[in-house]
Length: 412
Image 1 (cartoon, rainbow, N blue to C red):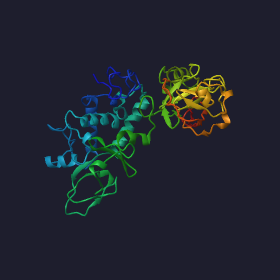
Image 2 (tube, helix red, strand yellow; image 1 turned 90 degrees about the vertical axis):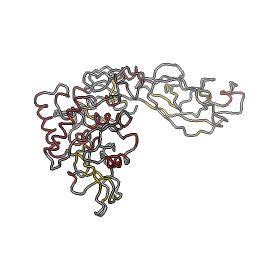
Image 3 (spheres, rainbow, N blue to C red; image 1 turned 60 degrees about the horizontal axis):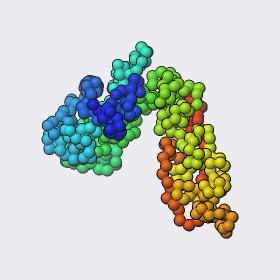
Image 4 (tube, rainbow, N blue to C red; image 1 turned 90 degrees about the horizontal axis):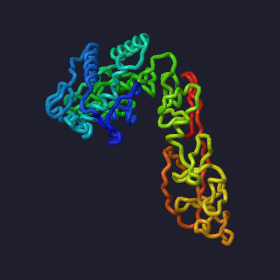
């Protein structure tokens, strides 16, 4: 049983989707679930990574080990040096046994070192040519880029060095992390030994070095190959689908909910996940505060302070006299909109000196929330100052094209 740390009791426990590498219950990734121990497949892959590194390295560094207090410690350190090293690391990331730090380590092992980046057996439906290419891809990265940081005291007899991350000095007697692939004497503060892309601490000091930077395994792989947004595997095929700066296997560019293929179809992107128009309207359409009907993806809508209306004279109008308010200033009060202060008080506007021209319009902050509408009355505004709203149309993009074509920019 691995409950989701993000969804809590809403998720009954992690259950892998057939090919997406997410939970079928809550749609969160595996590393968001409270995995209580390093999975066996990851443990084996870690040992293989370290042994492969040792074969290609002049270092005699071992893989690190656990102790009664810690789930993992840097190899080759005396007990007092272990304490000195971990004193530099944020407390919630120190891998004490049965602590948030140990859970953080497991989460980062799963995220930073995906097994499917190295071993074909953890991938979905690779053909023989793709399996061969993945093995070559993995072997090349291990041979040319893989390394493991070595923790040691900076000699007190030597002039201080500069941390490659923060640029501050590392003095004699300080604990430092050295990376042999970065060159002799190149070092980092323990808390600065981070991936250049995600800025997370490099789990168990495993890094991939390229172009004068250190990366976690995941983000180094993405510098060489695109990663499928749906299945999380690197794309080895000659063609892929690209949309809004992200990539998919051709067969995986489908609706996130119903998995209908979106090739040649219209779609809407939400949180980097594509949806067919039908599913998007079912799950995420806003509802009009006047008529109560959902606002279609091709319909104009008015938004103000989390409320939504069809951009029509029938819906965006004064709640008292029904005067259309498109392009006019309006007065929000009690979750309703009015054309004037008398209307907001239930009075006949014809018997008042107030009129639209007497209202001073002011800019409004507009937010399009992309969530199921809930009635949340606005706080009544004092006085007779009116606000304005702007028309916003949710348009569906035409399906993204193969990787040579342009990505689509979608307003939702």
